[in-house]
Every structure is written in structure tokens, then in C-alpha cells.
Length: 290
Image (cartoon, rainbow, N blue to C red):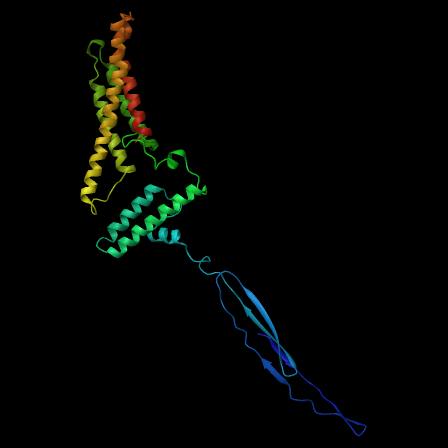
């Protein structure tokens, strides 16, 4: 608060004599200082004015403080706040958050529309960031919108614990085949290993491709689950058939057609080699792809 005081002493001259006059009453002008709070800064302003014959200085000062981190939330930030997700969350976490919100607001059409609108906002913002170069993604993410085939394998590494389980199953089946005598060896254990890999793939797809919420869309959830099951068995059983064709049937066909002589030990260990190549290929497919 600034208070300006001004006193004026005046004298008058009459008949050649100096007659002192009483000091005039002091005029006190008090001005209130208005303090305001603004978001994002402070400011001071001064204004000079005149009242009669006096100069008056009026000072307005405003003190600002930053409240709540400063600034209003933009559309994307409001959408993320509504869904309860952060900028670092990936697409899977966003989809899971959307499913949870839909289940929470089931029956409330207005809330469900807000959730859908928030999800669309985040998707548009992510696409704009990628197209403008502000967000650098891997090639697999940048080309995720372009899918050549619905059944095409896509890169999706599994956690270390799943890696150990998958290769452990493949190793166990190979050891069982290796422990059998030469005259009793067959691909039966390898077939069991391929079926086990198919179930491992199905479990992985449940985690990385959750699909619709069964409580909200039961028909869509059943259809998506059937697609996961079919994809798992097509990958693994189809991979087993391709390996048998490439490592077992084709070499035998070439040997018989061209009448090529091969060592006896190669014929006796053929099932073992096919088992190793097939199981290792399936374990790699299940561990690093989906």
C-alpha cells in the first residue's frame, strides 16, 4: 500500500511586510492496493494523474501465483485423465483402461460416450504425433496400421519367464525322443510338443490381444476367443507340418529320386534331427511372434 502525503506551506506579502501564514491542512490521499491472483505470472502498473494542482501517483500492483501447475488441460490431457492413464502407457494399457471404464459405466450411455470420445481423442493425438515426427516409434509400430494378411505373424517378444518355459518344453520333448532306441523313435513326442506350443501361443494371445470385454459384448468376445484359438493352432500345427515337409519328407524324396547314398547313422538319427529343428522353430515362433 502506498500512501502519498503532500503538505503545502503558503506565505502572503502585504504592505511590504512578511506575514507568515498557518500551514494549510495536510491532505492525505490514501489509495488501496488491490492484490489479485492470476495463473501464470505477476504484474505491476503505475498511472500518473492530476487532481487540481496536485500530482497524484496511483500504483496498482498485482501479485500472481501459479495454481495447480499452471494452465488449463488440453483435450488430450483431459482424455487421459478421464481414462486414468499416463503418456507412457502403451496401446494395450489404454485398451485395458477403456474396457475397465466401460464396465464401470455400464448402463450409463452419457458416460460411455465420454469414454469413447476420450479414446478417439487419444488415438487421433497419437496418430498426429507420429505423422508429424514428434513421436518416434519403431518400424513395427509405424507400420502397424498396414497389415498385409490377417494371419501374418507379427513381432511380439515374450517375457523371460515365458521364454524359459517355451524352450524348456521343446528341450524336454527333444530329450524324450533322444532317449528312445533307434528302432522305436518316431515323431509322436514332437507332435505332443507342437500341441503344447499351440496352447502356449493361445495363452500369449489372451494377454497381448485381450479383445472385447465379455460382460459388455459377449458375442464379440466369443468370436475373438475363437479367432485366437484358431490362430494358435494354425501357427503351431501348420509350423509343425511345414517343418516335417522341409526336414523329413523333402530330403527323403530327393534321396530316393536321385538315388543318393547317405551314411547309415544319418538315417538312424533322422527323426532326432527333425524333432530338434521342428521344436526349436516352434519355440522361437511362440516366443517372439504372435
